[in-house]
Image 1 (cartoon, rainbow, N blue to C red):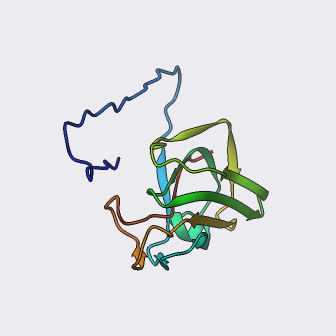
Image 2: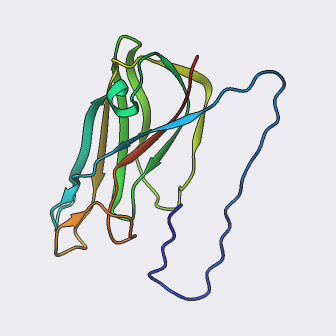
Length: 158
């Protein structure tokens, strides 16, 4: 969770946690993080880009298939669009497409049904930004004035 504290003042945390009790066996879930740590956005651009291409197995140190339960897309206030696609043994297609990013969407989104992924699948993460309000290069960082291009994948073993 990131908080935008630049405006100051009295801030209230409205975070929530949803829990669900299920019958039967429990599977341990884990996150695989796709993060462009080399992100550098030039100032004054209507559309600047960041992203990465990585095999799922390399990103998550996986040796076998996993089921994708949900996804946490993340950028900061300059973010405009985010896309994550896959291509490989498990198939090809879009895993998430956010055409109009809103910084306040700080949550994990779940799929209706799990999506089977293979460690050899190539994942392509692309983020776009509007840097016209900046006069210096914007880099990756945890502050709200910094930027991120992140997709957190919540996975379990099949």
